[in-house]
Amino acid sequence: MRLISNYLFKVVYYLSVSYFTYLMILITLQYIPIKLDTAFLNIKEEAIQFKHYQIAFFSHVYTSLFVLILGISQFSETLRKTFPKLHKNLGKLYILLVLFIASPSGLIMALYANGGIVSKISFCIQAVLWFVFTYKAYQYVKKKDWHNHQKFMLRSYALTLSAISLRLFKWMIVSAFALPPMDTYRIVSWLGWVFNIALVELYLVTLKK
Image (tube, rainbow, N blue to C red; front, side, top):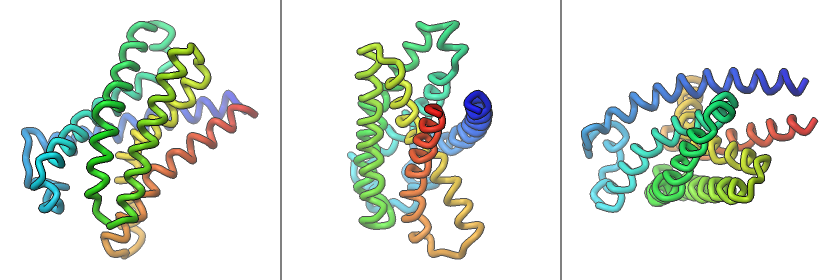
């Protein structure tokens, strides 16, 4: 049962992440070269006037894409066993990008999130947890506690994937219900990352059985 669960999880994981990473690349390309009046920024007329928001936004958009791709490699058993040094270096880069750029910039952006206080609280919690989980993964790998390192890397990457799940849930809700845009955004601001964390915790529980 455990082997089947692991296999199915990996198949769904790699297929889903690979496809949605491709979609995220297309989204990121909209902001190359840097533009202040395209896509999502068209509804951030006030926030985008602040220099610190501009820096946070583009830092977040550009680094999050690399973090998304780097994270995929960290769960490849083949890479970990065949090229352990490469696995280690890619993991270091993932952790550095999250801790020093992606998470802090995400926290700044959270303070200007659409949807009012409900969305702002959600994105702030997410940014803080992203930092904490990634830092815990770093602490455990330094102690050579591989079991807990992997658990917290899974949690960290679950939050990385929220960039994808948020958009997926938004599409599903818009397709199924006629909710006002801001109501939809408030829902997905929580659902996008809480669902991912719940899924990871469920997976970790099944591993114990």
